[in-house]
Structure formats: structure tokens, C-alpha cells
Length: 383
Image 1 (cartoon, helix red, strand yellow):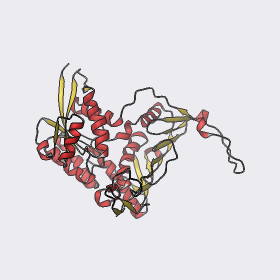
Image 2 (cartoon, helix red, strand yellow):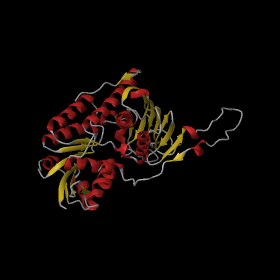
Image 3 (tube, rainbow, N blue to C red):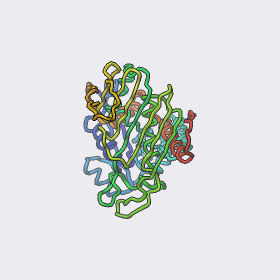
């Protein structure tokens, strides 16, 4: 058994997602487990260099986690031929330019989404990545959640019969930042900084729907800025000028109708921060991040509407939980391992920058639908 080193340039790892999910729970977890076993018996060993503009912050992070290499000079890092992969979890508005620079430097690229706030830029980036011959990928983390993996298993088994509809509820109350600190950074609520829940979340819902329920064919979306003023990290009040909630309906391939509400101004009264209910001719299922509950056609109760009598049925009692028959690992880590195997041994990989462009397309159409107050078709993109 031989070891193969793979050098990773990691940018944007001081932010919430880059730090928690990508650095600590993915790459450092892969490092600490001794790498990734390859098909030929070798092990792929990751060697990250973390890069950021704040040298002190990056150095402290490196020391905390025993990361041998760090830098505040991205251009110098990209010039090192011993590092083959560039990863970005920085700001949306910088992403396309950084990825293009990394591709020009001969690096394989992997990134968070959205890949841009502009469809033309996102498509051009995907085309350049294709033409380069380098490996490229975009994070599609929700497909690797245990709850959604269970939905996929139910779909593949034929449990649903013909899928009729999907209803998704995502979100929670994000505090305004005055008497309690906000759980999300203030840039999320400023349009000029790439904020807005439509740009953020419709990119996710595109790959979830395309991969699990049917390709998205049309969208109708209504956005809202429910909280017009918030308080930033320094205690300064600012105008929130972009959407903090989105109410969208989608037509999917095969006649499936999907309705997904996304909100940072809702209080949770459901099993999880995100839930998907899938209804089919033979059965239904409700999944969250981890759990999944089913109700088959033969086990469906027969309620009767009676407004004069208090409801006697507990509808939750009529659902059966799908067991955890396989060990669940962090979804970001699972996708990282898949992408790194794609680089090392050309293992299958369906989530290139083309998928990122599709997410940007749906977000852009969602914003246009809101502005024009109408349904819009989702045309096929050409790369």
C-alpha cells in the first residue's frame, strides 16, 4: 500500500461554513482518519494550506488545528505546482473570479454555491472549466443528508408509486441583532454584498429537485423583505434591502408539483429546520436532516372533517420511521471524499460547475418571477 499526497489550497475557511463543515468536519477529519482508501489499495493523504486575507486569524487557526501550512498570499499559493486543488468558501461576489484564476493556474476546483450571482458568469465559468480538462465540482451537500438519502432509497425502491407533489419547509427565526446576536452574518441581508435568501436557497432546491424528484421545468416565486432593518456585527443599524423569505412553486418533469417555503423569519413548529413531504400514489414520506417517516397506501387512515368536534386522531401515530440501516457521516465530508476520489482515480462525479450554473439559473429566474409577478419556464442550459 502506497500513500499519495494531495495538496489542497483552502480559501474562505474562517467563515461559518468554510470553517465548520469544510475544514474541521471534512478535510481535517479526512486527515485525522489517515486519508482515503483508493480502489487500488493506496491511500490518498490530504495536505491542506489555508489561505485568507487576515494573516493573524489564519495563523491562529493553523496553530489550533496543527495545520502545517497557511498563507495570506493567494497568488503565491496558486503558483505552487505541488498543490493540485483549489477550494473556495468565500463570498459569492468573489467566487467566479477566484475559480477562474485557479483554473488558469492549472488547479482542479471545488467550491460552495452559488457559483455567481449572475447566470452568464456562472455558465461561462462552467464552460471554461470543461475546456480546461481539469476536474471541477460544486457542493451539493443536501443530497448527502441522511434524511434525503432515505427519500432517495424510497424513490428507487418504488415506494411512492407515481410521485405527485413535494412540499418543503425550510428556515428559522434569525434574530435582528439588537437584543440578541443574529445567527447569520449581516451581509446576508444586503443586496450589494450578494445577500438574499432566493440566491442562497434556490441554488440548493435546484439540485435537490433535479436529483430526487424531477428536473425543474418552471418556477413561480414571491420574495419578501419582512424585516427592513437589522443590526450588524458592530452594533450598527442598517437597511435590509434584499429578501429574507421566499415562497416558491415549481413544475417538475413528469407533472410533479413542488412547493418550497424558505424563510429566515419563521419560528419552527416541525420536526427539523428543513422538512420535505413527498406524496405519491402508493405512499408518502416526510424527511428532515436525519429522520424520515413513511405512510403507505394500505396504512393510510381515513379522517373525517368535523368542525364541531375536537380532533381525536393523532396523525403522527400513523407514520413509521425509516431505520438507520447504514452509518451516517457528515454530508460535506462524504461529498469531499467523492470529489477527491474523482481527482485521484477518475471515480464518478456528476456535480460539476454545470450544476452550479443551474442553481444560479433558478435563483435568477426566481428573482425575475418575483419582480414580474409571473410564471417563468426554466430553459435547458448549453455548456
